[in-house]
Length: 120
Image (spheres, helix red, strand yellow):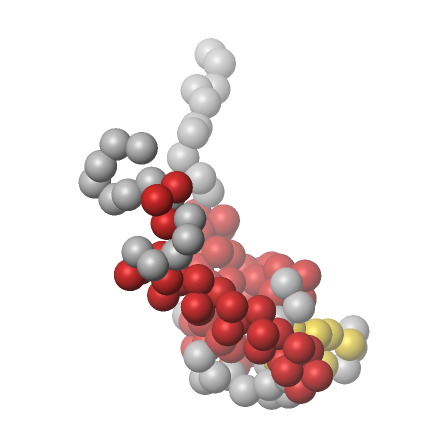
């Protein structure tokens, strides 16, 4: 008898993603501070998960640049790079200004943007 296809995602994938989102949000909102060491056992206890999904989440966060690891030494929240943050301010300010213009309809190209609830 052939095994039926299972299109449902595996629970493990969900746990890995859940760990990723929770840790990422804690880094972004400052709950986990820049430079703070992250210990697997503490994260596992905090999240109520086993080590595997937590390690997978940390690997993904490292790829995203939010944590850094030194094998056999530490995993920590990536320290702030003040120069990079300072260099990003003009970009962020421009994006905020554009968002405000689009929200109020004052952008020069606001008429080109599709409107909510209406036809494009």
